[in-house]
Length: 204
Image 1: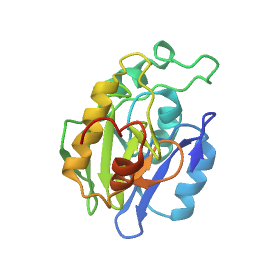
Image 2: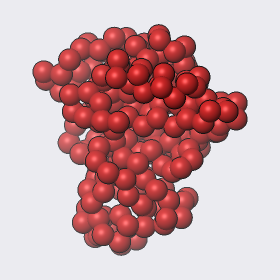
Image 3: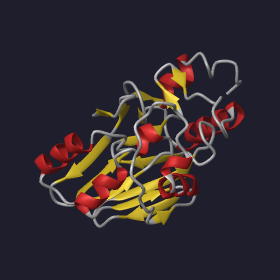
């Protein structure tokens, strides 16, 4: 579901027997809560790919309403602890502070009771960017898009790190792995390796 003023993708993975997780609740908390309530599952976790406001804007409200634990990087922890100090997009609405319950590390598996997700550190768009692996694929935030990549001109961004992070995913997962980006439609690792113009000159 695209959410918030920049329509960042918020993904909701749920199973009636084990519960659900939500990835990057960037805004529109009431609408996201309707989606969660309609699924009639316990929301077990909020997974954050990075700390930009268009991806974390509704985190505090969703956590307060559901009791779900928040997982993210040290970067996301710092942003949510002091939102007014980390608003990088002028004119964006303010958002409420929240506490990241667990700062994750690279290749860390998180058991949510019948559902396991893996945190993969993939810096580049931001220094603390995370790609989450959960069935049915990779949820990469603003690392990789269909036919494009995330911007690296913001504070802490690095195209070299971003390219290395994408390459890391391509080495760890098969080409048919589905990628769910933070904006736009889904793709696969193989499609991006073969056709993404931003990756074509990297010699992979």
